[in-house]
Amino acid sequence: MSSLLQVSNITKRFQGLVAVNDLSLTMEHRTIHALIGPNGAGKTTTINLITGVTPLTSGEVQLDGKTISGLPTFQVARSGIGRTFQNIKVFPSMTLLENVMVGGHEIAPMGILKGLFNMRGAQKEEKLLKDKAEQILDYIGMYKWKDELMENLPYGRQKISELARALMTGPKLILLDEPAAGLNPSERSELVKVIMKVYEDGTDFFLIEHNMDVIMKISSKITVLNFGSKIAEGTPKEIQNNDEVIKAYLGRKYQAQGRN
Ligand SMILES: Nc1ncnc2c1ncn2[C@@H]1O[C@H](COP(=O)(O)OP(=O)(O)O)[C@@H](O)[C@H]1O
Ligand SMILES: [Mg+2]
Image (cartoon, rainbow, N blue to C red):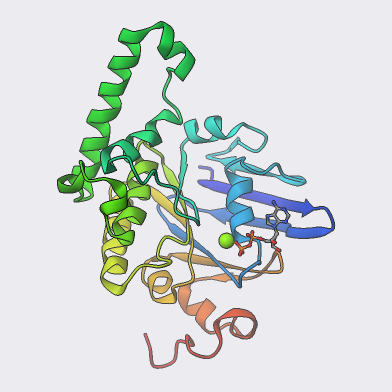
């Protein structure tokens, strides 16, 4: 059986800058794979390359053995990849439910133009999206806030709702870009709970994160980037004790001795 995600020798050049340099990584089914490294290391660019937001300079990406690099973003989404963004992308004056529904439009069969000429079809589609969004909000424990305006929800809940939005397309893999950034400790543990629930129900995760407690708690495997290149890869324990990683990113604080 092929791996879930196979990233082969991907490179991204922005004019003179090599943001991602000949990166290869393999993500197996039923894992949570973390990508860590200092600011500017190329982590967000890697997610943008996998999802087709940014075209590759070279290399290839496969999902379940099928090449997805070169496909437009909506086709990457259709092939089974969902994502969230480093900077929160919500519509503040829309309700939580409406914000989650937006996620379904990424792969919904009916485009806006088509909807104009086929009102009944469009209404049916809206109803399906609404049912699905309500189901997902219930599933992650946010149903009671569905009619709240997004801007009235605490930041942590807004952020977790982006994961709900990503679930709208029924992905087998979700890419999260710094999901815990800006969250307080209780929101952080709520996030971890939601991720683990979704994971246990069959969706795998690839995540970028700076909060090492979150990373160490949930990831099966960690890849470390520095200046666009992979400098280490391994289990959380191996990474905590890797000298190069400690020097480039972690510092001594997260060394494993005495803190397992
Ligand atoms: N669209 C772009 N144009 C030019 N340079 C970019 C662009 N996007 C990212 N970069 C540069 O690529 C490098 C990697 O950025 P990024 O992937 O955002 O890093 P990270 O997410 O690890 O902090 C940085 O030096 C950044 O300034
Ligand atoms: Mg980033």
